[in-house]
Image (cartoon, rainbow, N blue to C red):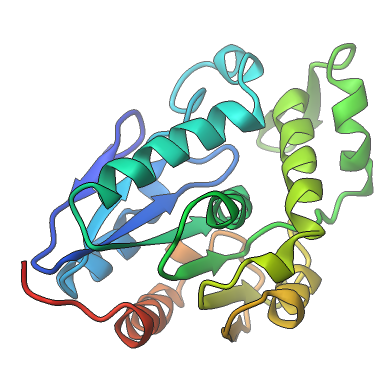
Amino acid sequence: MLGEREHIEIPGTGDGAVLLLHGLFGTPNELHVLGGQLAAGGYSVRIPLLPGRGAPASELDGTSWEDWMRAATSEFDALAATHSRVAVAGLSAGGTMALDLALRRPAAALLLFAAALTLRHRGTVLAPYLWRVVRRWPRPTGRVPVRAVGELVGGMRGVRGRLRAITAPALVAHATGDALVPVSSALRLSRELGGPVELLLLESATHAITADVDRDRLGAASLAHLRRYMPLAER
C-alpha cells in the first residue's frame, strides 16, 4: 500500500511546501489523502516515513524522540532549500513533533491534527521509566512498544511549557470524542500558542481525523489556512 514502507512526495505548482508528519505507530499512508488535497491547491507535499516505522516493532524500540526530530528537521531543511516557505503539519504524535519543529525552524504555518499534549491513558506517564523492564503493553489490536510511548511522553513534556514561543499561525483540529488524545490538548493549544489560532472541533470519536468521514472538511480547512497565511506565488 502507498506510504506504508516509503516516503510520499507530491509536487506542487507554487513556491510553498508542506511537511506532513505521521503518528506514533502510523505511516505516511494515513496522510496521503490530505497531502493530495494540499498538492491540488498548489503546495508541494512531503510525507516522510519516520525512523522505526514501516518495520518490525523491534526497530522502533531502538529509536528516540531526538532520532525522529533529527529526521523531521532534515526534511524541513531540504524543503526550505527549494521553496520560499515551508508549513509543518502533523497527526497525533506527528502534531507534537510539528510543535517541536516550530521551536527549531521558521515554520510559516502549522496544521495540527489531534496533536498530543497529554494522553487519555493515565499509565502512559510511567512509560519513560518502565520501558527498560516492560517492553510491550497489550492492547486489542496488538502489543504497544513501551519505549516509543515513553519517548512521546518526553516530547510532550518538552513542548508543553514552550507553547507561547511558537508564533506560527496554527490550525488546531480535533475530534471531540477522541479516545486517545483528549480534546483538552486542542483547547490548551488554542489558549497558549503564541500566534494566531483557528480551532476546528469535529463531532466524532475518531482519533485519525485525516482518514475519517470529515477528511474533506479537514482538507478544505487546511487549504484555506495555508492560503490565508502562506499564499503561493508561481515558481
